[in-house]
Structure formats: structure tokens, C-alpha cells
Image (cartoon, rainbow, N blue to C red; front, side, top):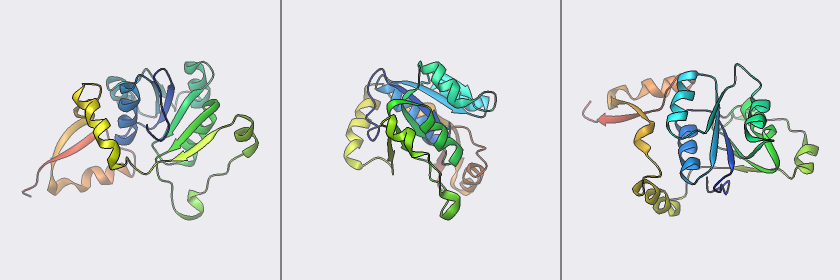
Length: 191
């Protein structure tokens, strides 16, 4: 949330409720922002609510851009694409209120599949900011850990299972089809 300069009271629309999206929700809620999560699976939306989402939207049942604008009273201050798809990136940008910022965390494909057509005039008129984020710099870790120590963040709430090292490919393979729930933690390194 450092890249997006999120503040208490900001509406933050997070597209995607995988590990990165859920972490973004918890961090946004931890600083007093109001996260809205857009995802396609009710079990992921339920987990998002448990980790701090102020509102959840099933993107298969409604127009997510219109729903975000309705929930936030005109658009989010910050949007995050934690999926990495043309649709979620564009939906994020279009869910912003004037002066809003979109942060792209999800990686898109390489080459032409990763190109996203943008209509530039609305970006100019609305003074929209677009930023990319490649992880958290190490200098920010003390602030993050202080939030954990203060009870504002609970990374354990994102964990939905434990696996041995021998099964590490299972959740990685499931990620390609967005068929994961929360985060799996390796607890047995012997195998």
C-alpha cells in the first residue's frame, strides 16, 4: 500500500482475492482504509471479508465497475489489480474516482498478450495515476512488522492450509487456473 499512498478512510478496490489480493486487503484495512474486493468465487469473497474487506463483489453476478462505484459513492481512491489480466486492470482503472490511483501488482503475459489498450483522454481528464508495484522494499519491513506486533495485521488469517515440501507444486499449479483459497504454508521440509 506504500506505492498507492493509501490513507485512513480511503476506498481501496482490490481486484482478486488470492494471496496477494488478500494481503492487500488486510494491509489496507490495517491502516484504516475501506477495502472492497472483487472476485469470482464466493469462498474467496468470504475469506476476504474475514481478513478485513468492508464490502465484497462477485464479478460474475454484476458489472464490477458499476458495483464498486455504487459501494464507494462514486469510485475508489485506489484500485489494485492483484490478478494480472487485461479485464481486471481495465476494471480497476475504470473503478477510480477522479484523482485516483491504480496500482498494478498482477503480472500480465509477455508480448502482445500482455498489452492493454487504454483510452487516454479519460485518464487525463480524471487526473488518474497508474503505478506498478514489484513487491515491498526491505526498508518497509519494520513498519509492516510493527503493524503485526500491534495486532493491526494478522498474516496467519490468510493461511488456509499446511503442506509438505513434496507437495509444493500442487498450489503452484492451482494458481494457473485461479483455483486456490488463501495461502498454503510449507511446514515439513523433510520430504
